[in-house]
Image (cartoon, rainbow, N blue to C red):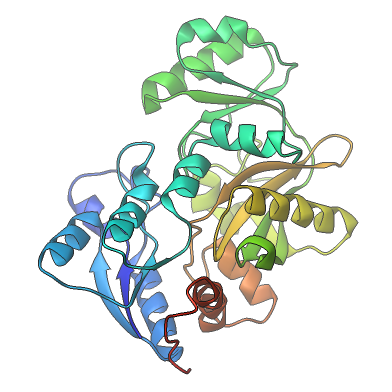
Length: 331
């Protein structure tokens, strides 16, 4: 099968003058090369497309593919992750991973939490600050945890993200509003264990792939898995497979949220425990990183003895179950 590959290459945006943090969600060349190699190993013909501008030009020129493997994060706006899937749907081209509705919803952490909370999935109490005047109306017990409402890769999360009083809340919230020009999510701080859960499949066919635990060491900065900690994870924390009762409960929370949010094919969710050890949903990433030796989902696959091609194959298995009319090339 001829499968187009859509992605945002980090080096392209760095060359245009964007910063390391601006491009934190974009992919390295190694990611795209590994994905294409996996698709070949699985019996498919990968066609590198690139980002939305190149996709638009290719479509306008009449190019088509049997399917598209989409890992485009997008650059601007709260709908940025949904842009490529929406364009593909307009041209009736099937694609791997979640649809525009899910991608818009999950990028907005506050809206996402409202949906999972209403479905009965445990998540920390929260408030949203859209302007400075909203700060005084926040009525949650300290300590609190602050982050931009629609960023990924830990952007905006650092040593100051946990605040212990109103003065710190005003200071940090004000800085985040000015820096990211978007609302700030304020949550009651969860002091317990933190897990990342890999999930494959769609709907009732979805299942937990594995649960990894993030165990900080003395070099870990602050109280959250922020951008700086992610970039230097090898020196700052241990990532290990977890299978105890609490980890399994965290996996159940993640899977419940995955299904409620209608995520598809594969991705990951983050879950953290409160002071009593009860797992709470933090967020879900339906466009999770898939770079071998770097991305959380790939670590889980490694722990389980799965090759990169086998991980990609699990995503494609779910995709083909959603599109039974497509001919799946034999591996």
